[in-house]
Image (tube, rainbow, N blue to C red; front, side, top):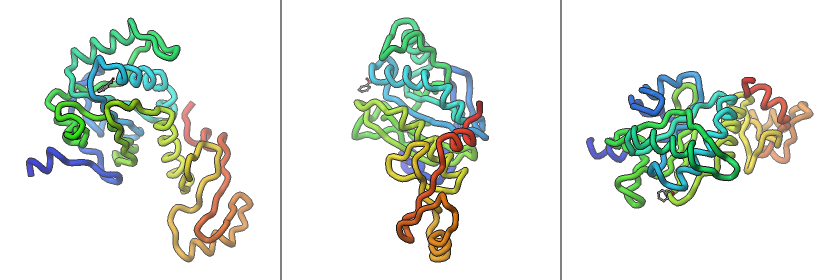
Length: 236
Ligand code: BEZ
């Protein structure tokens, strides 16, 4: 049982595992403190490393955009609180990257020196490192359910525009009861409906909705313009 817990990997559709932690913004009780918000919980291998620095600067610069989409950010590494604080201060005072400078990271960064949270979330991948988390991303919805999981190795910096696209796509899928096709961006056609059944297939083939176009019973698309998506999803 102990081993099972140590190497547990939460899965999509499950409740996000609970934990209490100390962060650079005070203590948090996860995920209950985030009830009602989307949250991206992400890990990085170590403070004072270059790829992680570029990631934190990028994420911090985009934080307002995520917040507008009702999404909060929470970082984690197995470093201690004083390391986190010193690293984030150094970033603000000294680092310039892709035109970003004086960047202040105001979202919480969890200290996880015991690796309790990292183990619970399957962020430690021994093939990569026994003592550092990989770059894991957990997208958690307002009910505390895990909706997407992505893992990157230590050497590969994440694409934060893609993380934003994931948040908007998941919210659009929930709001409009649709699915989003390959490379979907807000304003592109969406797929309707998400669940397939003979009844639904016949119904949608015969739909009089001018916005719906069916190519065959299994492939129907619908237009939802960008303005509608953002008007319904973003809080201004
Ligand atoms: C980095 O953030 O630069 C990094 C961290 C761990 C391994 C390799 C690179």
